Image (cartoon, rainbow, N blue to C red; front, side, top):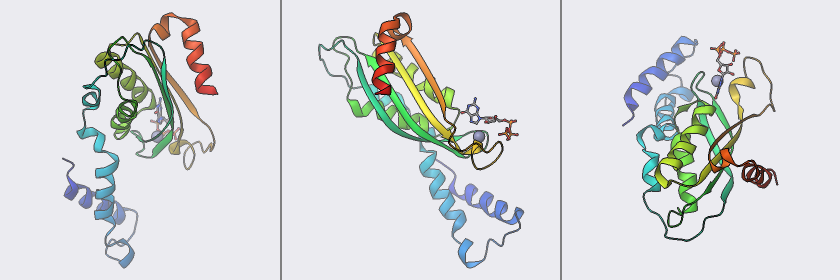
Length: 186
Ligand SMILES: Nc1nc2c(ncn2[C@@H]2O[C@H](COP(=O)(O)OP(=O)(O)OP(=O)(O)O)[C@@H](O)[C@H]2O)c(=O)[nH]1
Ligand SMILES: [Zn+2]
């Protein structure tokens, strides 16, 4: 479990360090609020996303399945600022190894709610699906805006970072990969 008390102490110290008065009316409850918020946005650290892929449907389908435009909110591990955007997850199941559509989004969620790098987030999703469903292939694309590049530092609002992780038949077969990308772009 997340140590809420420790977060409260730390947030109080940060407020003091920036020259604020943590006891003033508006800030009194802030350390506890931030602790509750971190408990929510880092809950993926206490989740094993593989568990969402335990149950499978014994469908005969062996064609591409794509769930696109899955909203993601994660936290850049360098600055602890949000990066957010969309994830697109495609896979080609083997007979009998079809998963529930929401489970793909649950895997995305489980890996997002941690201090993350966009590249690692992208490959963790792909590798988990490969491992648990043993599909013919997986393709994961994430497009995101990083607040550490917009509100501070280089300050380039609107810039997007695209990452992809391509496994199995999506890697081997150019036409399959192109089909997935064109469906994502549509
Ligand atoms: N590869 C990768 N880099 C990221 C991600 N999120 C943030 N970064 C980058 O992490 C880098 C950290 O660079 P540092 O030089 O250590 O830190 P910094 O001085 O705050 O860097 P600036 O952001 O350039 O001001 C920056 O270039 C960020 O843009 C991510 O998901 N993937
Ligand atoms: Zn950052």
